[in-house]
Length: 362
Image (cartoon, rainbow, N blue to C red):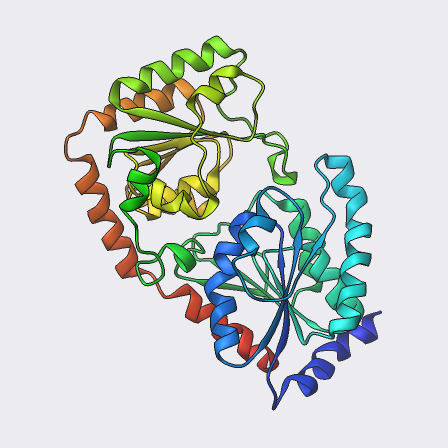
């Protein structure tokens, strides 16, 4: 086994030099599609071949219909036990696809499946990650990756394989070069610019959510009271992974997934248990409050920019939200902070594409 790992880079280096790449991009979460969307387009524009493999979960299948590229869907397990059992099943599923497609390089957002299969086939694996608390997944992936890419805000040291970049993955799809907010979306859903607040309730069942706590509402009355306090400052829209209370349905907005970031851009505030949505809101120049006992390096850095806040206690989060909502200069202030952030960060899409093309140099 050690002999194989010693020769693996030499074998792959010989294969990659002098011709266009064949790549597999693995999608495990809807956010991954956003992150790799422009990267996929640019790779294809440069003549490389790309195949997408994805977990059949949430709305991934619906979103991927818009991409004209080969795609196959694998099994998804919801429970922690299922996820553990699913490692072997998904490894075998991806191995069969990869043997047939014969890619030069595997690319994913820290997936252990791509890591294991790339090792079995003697191929390059490039991992892009942003979640420090995903310790188990990172441990399953790290030994098999050639390089692991993280934002400079990532607070874990992953050793010599780690490459840090001065940007955020969210800028791969929310940078002004790639995202143009459409005000027509407001009319489509009967919304008023800067007139609504987005609340996110998460199921907290991901592998990195073990021991994570958010709002912690014990009953529907607690939720109702919380929402009523925020309703004094605008319409409240609830985005939720849980649906066991009628109140949640009353506050839901049924929208197409592709419209989410347009809706978010024109919101007055985001407050919720979803770290990804908190970072997206902040990067769009919307005040964001992440309610959790866990931290993310990128959210901590966004707090230094004054764009986001991580608060463990839901009542403290509510007080912070109300204090911000009372500020008449809130919207303009956040858009100015956003401009500063964008001016100080690199083009992450160009960085990722260049790193993928340069895989043979590692």
